[in-house]
Length: 526
Image (cartoon, rainbow, N blue to C red; front, side):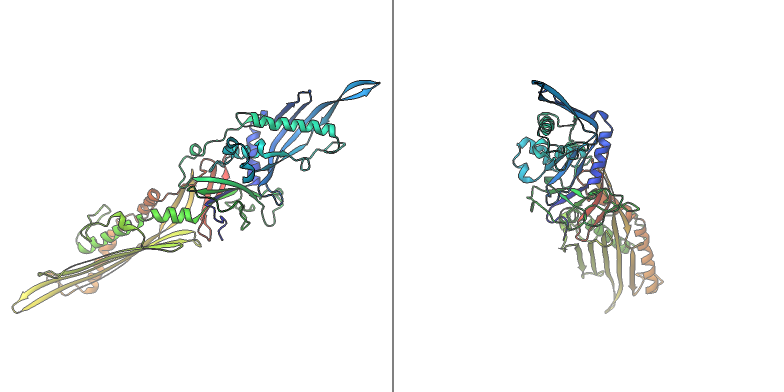
């Protein structure tokens, strides 16, 4: 079963990758790690923080995660009124917040997002937006956050959270001020740090082939043993579940079917930071199959070249365009549609028969080609193969009194050729591929038989005639840079572009056994 489970594409980013990106982002601006808040009654809280972190997986809560603020040093001061010597006296209390962690539970479930104001939901549910800025906005939108004292860590307190109502009420006030600031700021602000989320249509250097039209979120735990050098939960991931073409999502939750994140290895695996999976229905069925008919045009061009080589033994046939010679008119693009398809392959063929049995030079000509394209998930390749066939039978009738001499020439030429496309790289979201010849050089065979040499004094043997014709055919094909031509055609007609090219480094595209396209992801530094 495909890990997509009905979604058109899913982007997975590991907890370690998100936290590393948050660390890099906040470390570049020390001012963003200063915390200052004051209540109307004069209570104050100041501190210096380390970069925030996320914990993606909460047991039995696939739509929730934890966002934590970490204080390196700091304190908060609050005041209470006590009776001292019979008089009300203001008593200051200073509480150290050194090494504190304040945890917030973030709920990104669709049921919650449907209840928040539309302008808030519109900022969260942005299809194709995967940036660290977007994640920060998602994790720190006040309408989706709630302070969680049980998950918070407050070392140094004589009385733990929940045991001192006055102190806890003041701390709660600081938390409410923090959340209120998040709600009221025009530019989304985190720890005094303005967050601007880039528009995906601007951030991506090249428009994606299938731009997502809807998105929803969930988290997924890593299933299996975790290497000791990985932080607990580091391989858990945040999932962007997306649909394209304005189709409706199949469900709100997917089940675990595989680990979206790979454990660290040497050399590093492509999915250690994250991955994007694009459905076979999008890349193969809707994109490549529809555009790959250019391969059928190349097969017709090869057939035409073989026909020229056979019909013009004494000519030099180079790599330039040759006039169409196999029928009254060259087949139009509408004739290139695939004749048959299976889940992982498609086939096409073209044939033409022409004859003229009148006069003194009757002939019978057959030309045909068959094309097969296969998605090979085992070899991680797209394989194109073509069979090209030219049959020629020419007669030259010479009246000799009451009899007629029939000089015959029969030629049967076949060429097997093809390419293997291997996905190699992704530059700015655009999928690259290398082409290698499936038959190098193309497999050719020619048999030629003549009963005379059509007016020549010397009649060669059938074997020599066939050898000469094959040499001529090989020379004609050899003047064409087939690998270069098909690579350029692939780039022109079938270059697939992923969403998120401006946000991620993408590498090592492969097919899974279901035919989905999988590419490894690593965040670029914003």
